[in-house]
Length: 91
Image: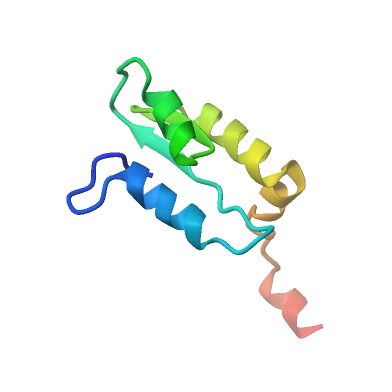
C-alpha cells in the first residue's frame, strides 16, 4: 500500500478495505514507503495494515513477510508450475 496517493492516502484506503471485508476474511496489506519517519510503522499498523516496509524494497524481507501473512504452504503454491514438454502433452 502506498501511503501517499493523490486522492486517498494509504491509511484511509486501508481503513476502507478493512471496513468492507466480510467476517473471517483479511486481505494482507503491506505498506511500502520511502518514509523512515519515527512512528510511521505504528501508524500503518493502527490503520489496519499488516506490515510496513521501506524503499528500496528488500526482496528477502518482502518474501518473509508474505510467507508469514499468507502461510508458507500458500506462498509455495503460488510459485509457477513446472513446464511440461510439448511431447508429454500428446501422450
